[in-house]
Every structure is written in structure tokens, then in C-alpha cells.
Image (cartoon, rainbow, N blue to C red; front, side):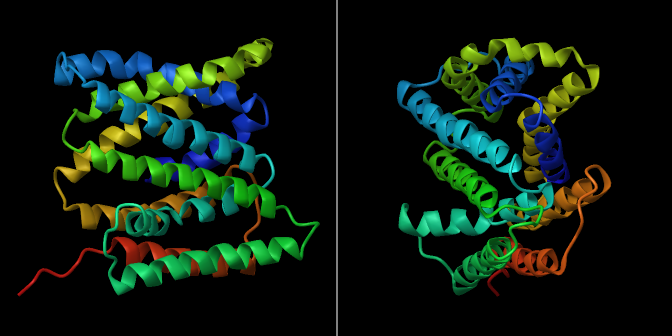
Length: 281
């Protein structure tokens, strides 16, 4: 979760230098180069059913293509600090999606978490609408929130095939589908790849790909083998925290009282949405 948050600032730097489809496509291709041998080594040959492959294609469309397009396009307009705060609404959006799409019954605290997340988004958005000269952007925040909705759709789609395909194999197919979907949008701007001749930019892209698409996944699922999912969920709080730290230390962004309100509301939302339930006596 700390690496996911740090990648918000990294993505902002990449979005300023490369076309958005190219960043996402190259990220997926680099991830595939590592995930393919890793899947064969850890999980062996896995035959994936056609229905599961179609589901993984939809996960790639929403969780990789839409998420990255929204995140990267939004970060061109808004700050990494506010981008991290918007991303922190993900657990609440997933909970609402589960209620509306999967017809799952939500506990009262999950409805309260959704309300707090909406309050955090509303505070930032209203501040931006009234501050045309500020560093943030209501449109940029809205684009990132569209990416959050894509990631939430990915999570809900993943529930449909849970346990039917190993994690690393599923991740490989997702990244492969994503690269195929993004490739047509990269070809018209292929000349922009020359910018990767800058070692610093190439290093950022490699870091972004190998952490966000590979290492974060492996760390998360390795952790889930040792602690309950509810406990793991609490650690999503590190996402906005490290996004803010990266934005301030790496990008020189400034924390304002509005951000403080946003942190308080989204932080409370995260804790309510993910705090482990008390075991029945």
C-alpha cells in the first residue's frame, strides 16, 4: 500500500513526459516480461477457461485501461496530493458497488464510510471550484475518481472468478489483455518513446511497472496468507499517507487546511470500511 501511494507521484512525473496510453502500455508489457516466467515457476502450466479469460479481459479494460487513463490524465491537471486523497475513496466505492451490483447487504458503518468518502471528495471539489488559481483541479480530481470507479469494477469482477485461476497467472493475462487494448492508441505516438533515452525517466517507468503491477500484488497476497483480509484492509490507509509524503518531499507540493479536512474524512472512511469485524462471542 505504501508503494501504491508512492506511485501516485511517480505517475505524475511520467504523465508530464510521455503520452498516457504509452505509459500504461509499456507498464503492462514490462510486467508481462516478469509475470510470465514467475507464473510458470510458481504455478506451472494453467489452463484458463474461456469464460474466465473474458472476465479477465473485462478486468483489464476497467482495472488497467480505465484506471490508468483516469489516473494519468487526472494527474496532468491536479496535484499528486489530491490524487492520493481521491484514490483513498476506493474501499467505499467498492462497498457501494457490491450493494448496487452484487446485491450484497452493507453494514451501517459501510454506509457511513461511503458518506465520509463523499464528504472528503466534496470538500476538495468545492475548494477547487472556488479557487481557480489553486494547484489542484476539480476536473483532474473527477478524472481520477473515474479511474477509481474502474478499479472498483475490477474488484467486483474479480469476485466472480475468485479461486478459479491462480493469482500470478490471472495477473499475467490481465496485463497481456491491457497491453493489447492500449497498443492501438500508442502506435500514432510511437516516436515519443525516444524520451526514454533519459535514464531517469526510463528508471521511473521501470519502477512504476515493476512495483505497481508486480511487487505490490505479490506483497499484498503474501500478507493475506498471514493476516485476515479485514486486518489487511486497514493498511490501505498507507495509500493516501505515502501519496502525500511523496507529493510534499518529491514534488514540493503544499498541504492546505482543505487537504487536512480531506485526510480526516477519507482516513475515517478507510478505517470504517476496512476495520476488522469483532468476532461473534
